[in-house]
Image 1: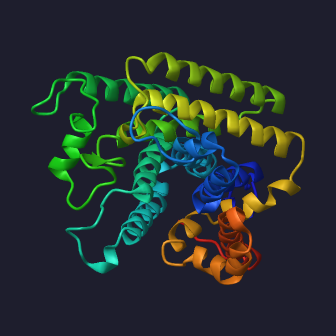
Image 2: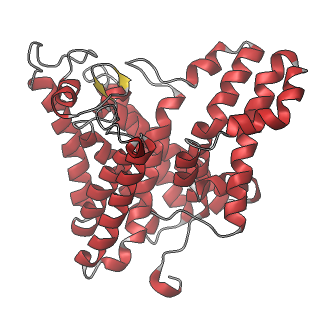
Length: 361
């Protein structure tokens, strides 16, 4: 461990985090523009969240990020093993900052609290980080695994046996599910991304914490003194097993991202594990690192770009410099502007990276 007690950064984790963030910092817009230009309806389908039931590539982006948050936790909290309570101030500070940034991101500074959305992406990350960090500090790996399984089974049982008033138990429709009812009952402000509740609402934090715990178990696996290829095989086997469990569970408990159903957690965890395996193999085992640098630049300032793109209009910057070229390019014009938007974000992050400026939360 380097001086100061900080764990070494894992390049493949930074690269994977950057790959994940790429899709919500312009990669999705680029793919949709390419889909229109080339007539690839299948690509456009993969770049939009499904209205309700099912799973596409874009549904993986958020759970993958939470999974990565979990991977890092066993490494970053290892120094507190002898005295777990010493980590509490650090954990609470990060949770508070993430909550504050999330609320600012949804309009806190406009002071229109009745119209504001209170749940959100950063808020969910904060809650998952809090409970997973406490589990890492106080439970052994077996306890963490049992906790994750209990959260998923308990969430299934809750929705299966407790009805929303006026509806039957196990009603998983947008208007009849218990998760949305609790949101309508408790949460003020507006909802996203369906009218009867929030897709990052209260009850769905339960399985989301399990997503982060699966990441923490993966981080523990990396810390074991095992050969690299053995770790890789373990990741692949765990990924395939998770996918099979999710698919087997889905007829009983459908895959619904807005409710973060337990089958959705397992399928997302399976794909996350396989992506971790790919990045680990290529970057750490094979030593092919140069290609990953653009993703590393994004990954090391992931929260920064998520927040700043809300008030820095990167698409307008791209249009200022490339609008003329786009207008002369016919049907390829939106593709050029999408590439420009990605480039504007990346140049901004590269400037921060070169100057050692990182948003630490």
